[in-house]
Length: 282
Image 1 (cartoon, rainbow, N blue to C red):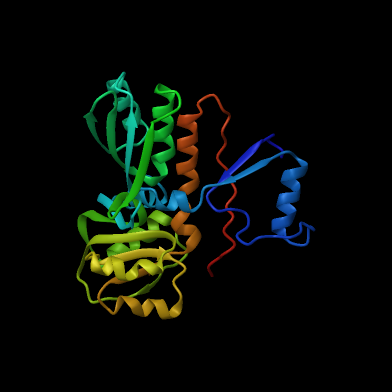
Image 2: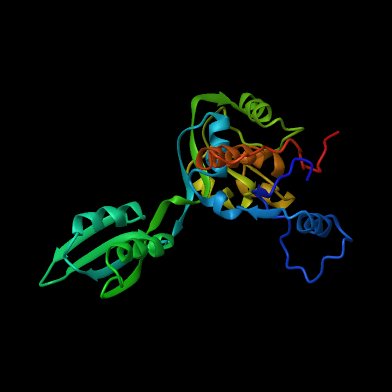
């Protein structure tokens, strides 16, 4: 309010559960009321930023100095095969347009007075691809249909895995993580490992990926919000670290700020200086 901000962009939404009233009895409703009264819009990215390759987890990997990063648990069935019939004029321009819109693979068959476009693309890009076709052919394709491709999309999914530049001893690795994330402390399940090289991680509450990290051959898995019984899932085979929910995602504001600054160079964008983590360590 003091800085005249019109829009607040966050990773986490201000509320998670539906609300029937805003009465000022709790901090969430008080924030919403303040935002409404001062014409401040609120926008939260959350899980789409968690699951995209260049999002929260890639930022964590960069802070830890990890190399050869990839998605730990890729999303399945996100690819579709889209077949569309279009006119034969301007096919080169149309091919370039659908690829820009998100098409990953394009096959063109030219027939009598029309062309058949067979495209493989992420499901979320279907609207953009059809929009690109309509922009070059008024009315859009004469006919079109799509089917789900049974495959994994390796640029979308949960967690990441990669290699440290040099193997570290167990205590050296714990100290490295603690220093990079400024942790007040690290809860961890131990394992009889001499060296840590391949590591997996997931920002926020990622204990659901413990088994996936083990299957992928990780020596350590870094996340937050691990409950007591979940620490047993590592079965003394992998170092399992809980560095804290806030600590694991603290650099996301930097990620959002950098992206917005590059995308909207004519906007006045400010990075918040307030740390909202309520958890303290004694």
